Structures are given as C-alpha cells and as structure tokens.
Length: 418
Ligand code: EPZ
Image 1 (cartoon, rainbow, N blue to C red):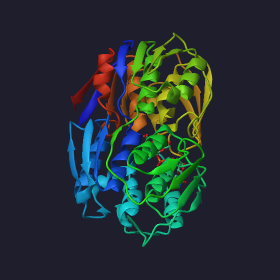
Image 2: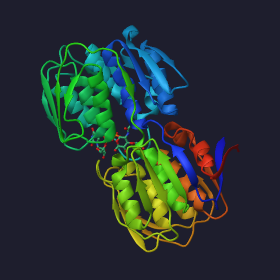
Image 3: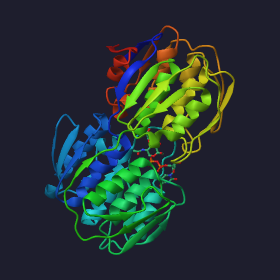
Image 4: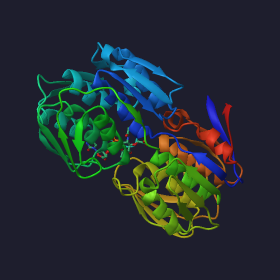
C-alpha cells in the first residue's frame, strides 16, 4: 500500500502551475459524445477520474487518443453501445454525465449508479426530474439508471436545490431537444460555464450559463471542436491554503483570479496577504492568523470542496472559528483525523467549532475522501514531526501530481510503499 510521508518545517516558496479543472473535465469528456464527430480537449488534468472516463468512452465504442492525458482526441462517431456499466462508472460520481450526453444524442442511456466521495447521500432526483420534464422515461433497477425518450422536447425546469450535476446533465440532454429548455435556479460554478462554452463551440445555443437562468435553444446537429479546459479553482485554492498554513510565499499561476475571490477574501480576513495579477495570485502567509467563521455555499460563495483544507488552517488560527457545511451532510470525516494531530474541534451536525491551538503534531492519518486527503497533506506540512497519510486512492482521483507540486515548492513529502 502506498502512503505519503510528510515532514513539517518547510515554508512553501516559489511558483506553481495549476492544472485543468477536474470538475469541468469530467463533464466535458462525456459531453463530447453529443457531437458524433471528433473533439479535441486540451488542458485536461492527469488524474485517475479522467483515466476512468477514457475507459468508459472505450467501452461505449468511441475512439480515444491522448497525449499523456493532457490533450484528448475523442471520436464519438463510432459509439455503438449505450450502456456505461461496470467498475469505471461505479468508481466516480461524474459518470452520471453519460446519462445526459447519451440521452441527448441517442435518446437512450444506461449508467451504473455513480459512486465518488462518501460525503453525503448524493441523490440524483433533480437530474431525473429534468430528464423527465424533457420527455424521458427514467427507471432505476439493480443499481442501474436507465433513461429513454422517443423525442426530447424543450421544457421549463426549476431546480429544487442548486445542483452542479443536475444543471450540467440537463444542459447535455437538452442541447439537441426540440424547442427551448429553461433551467431556473441553476448552478453558477465556473465549470458549468466551461461546459456550456464547450457545447456552444460544438454548435449548441446556450445562453445564461453563470447566471441563475440558463436558456437552451435546441439545435439539430453538433459538430466537433477544440476546447481548452479552465484552470482548477479548487486545486488553486488548495495551494493558496497550503501556502498560508506554512507561512510561505507562493505564486499560483494559470488561474482565473475572479474564480478565487471567495477564497482570497476569507484568507485576507484571516490576515494572509494576497496579490492578484492577470492570471496568477501570490499568497504570503503570516505568523499567527485570525480565526474566522465560514459557511459553504454554491458559487460564488465559499466552495464546499475547500472547506476541509480550510479547516486545517483554522486549527492553528488564534481564537474560535465556526464552520458551517451547508452542501454535504457528511463532510467532516477529516475532523477525527485532525484530532489525532492535536486539533481542538467539536462537530455538531453540520457545524464544526474549531478552537485554534498553537501547533498540530504529526500522526498516522487517513485520506477519508478527496479533499480530506488534500487537507491531511496541508496538516502534514505544519504538524510537528512526521505525518503518514494512507488511502491515497482518493487524492490520486482528483489532484494532478500533488506531491511533485508540493515538492517543487519545498514541501518535504514523499510517496512510500508501506
Ligand atoms: C459537484 O458534485 C462536484 N462533483 C463536487 O465536488 C462538489 O462538492 C459539488 O458539485 C458542489 O459544488 C463533480 O463535479 C464531479 P451537486 P454534484 O449536485 O454535482 C443536493 C469534489 O471534491 N442534490 O451540486 O454531485 C446534494 O445532495 C467533489 O471535487 C439533490 O438533492 O453536487 C447536495 O446537497 C465532491 N438532488 C447539493 O444538492 C440532486 O439531484 C449540491 O449537489 C442533486 C443534488
């Protein structure tokens, strides 16, 4: 079993380049099916979730070529199977995008119920509500979701909860539907906009992505295109927090600073110095940071995917911080691991009360999910002595070269066989 061994004491210094956004890439790859032509997708992150999506495309009969995964050529004209079943689909949440994409192109789809991080119930009722509104019949039996429609017809859909997945999946199913589809109370995350831009580059007619209301004018045909995935907001935020935690000085390149505003604002409130440039941010940590209260919200609020890394920083801030997780009901599994390292945290339902301590101490801990894994790496960088992190499967699903990048900034981290 592989583990990460981290020795604390080094302040992160230097420059780091952010990869393509995982949560955009994992939607854009399935979306390429809709064209029935050749699409080139650039700036893909080299992560296991992307490798699993390639496996699903191959199972469906698509032809895929890639340059070590950073640029992928997808020929979806050869697809001859509408069922994404099996381990690859079950291993990740984003496999549900094959439902919308195949329904949109072929009028039928079957996908194993998606897996992914264990951070809450993760229902897909809003996806199903959208597909049904467009005229599809949806069933779930024996762990497989099936959707089928003779014809998809545009509809008005109001999402009961703001859902990234449902917003994107309904866009995928609706781009070739007859007439106009409106998604109200839509998610506004940068990756929702990136997927809409990709679909528009294929000839779709989508307006309003990035606002509460998205209008999709169905088109008959889509063609191939070349698309560059946006930089990963969450990866960038992870390095911003790591730089602040180690009292380092790091310039994070290839980012869209506007996407990072909620994170920059919180870090500045704590006393961190942030300098914004055109496509980079510089983060300069200070000795003892101030505690802050934090509530996770859909974009443009503070992202749930950075709540766990951020709570590490709060464990060593001066005073008491209250963290409210309003998106996922089970996203405090990292707290038990942080307590092993000396953190003083009490969790009551969706609220964690963090009393800042002088320092954390190294310990053997687990990456309980993807972002918890990143949180543990940051904790290891500041926890006195050595930290050994197991369960790296989660980290490898979603962070490109995390240890190489941390090493290049001076972090003392290595992957060992244990
Ligand atoms: C996406 O998950 C991301 N995953 C998650 O990132 C992220 O935490 C989440 O959006 C919120 O930003 C991918 O993009 C692959 P949602 P998704 O649908 O789409 C409820 C990471 O670490 N809901 O926006 O599954 C749901 O229970 C991962 O990279 C319904 O009730 O999230 C949650 O409370 C983890 N019914 C809320 O909405 C539905 O049909 C938001 O979920 C769908 C969702």
